[in-house]
Image (cartoon, rainbow, N blue to C red; front, side, top):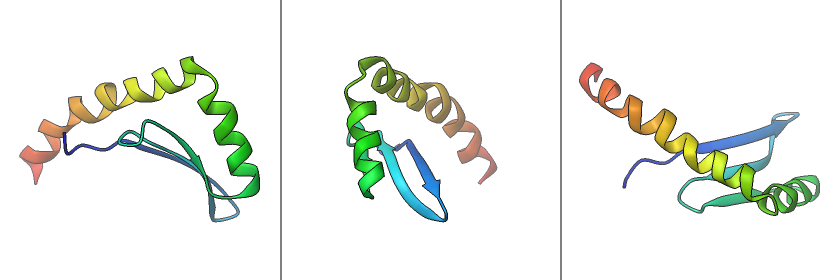
Length: 69
């Protein structure tokens, strides 16, 4: 429950768009990023893919990270 997957997109060192697994959708931080987020959020397969990344990447590696820390 306390694991969070974030997928951020940057342009020129400025965060444009971010997917946050706790929010469950993309959020845009610039004018272009808002348009990108609207497009990504309107496509259910993109959202499902990002939500699956939390399980595929985070949950499989959390045990490894805790053992090495």
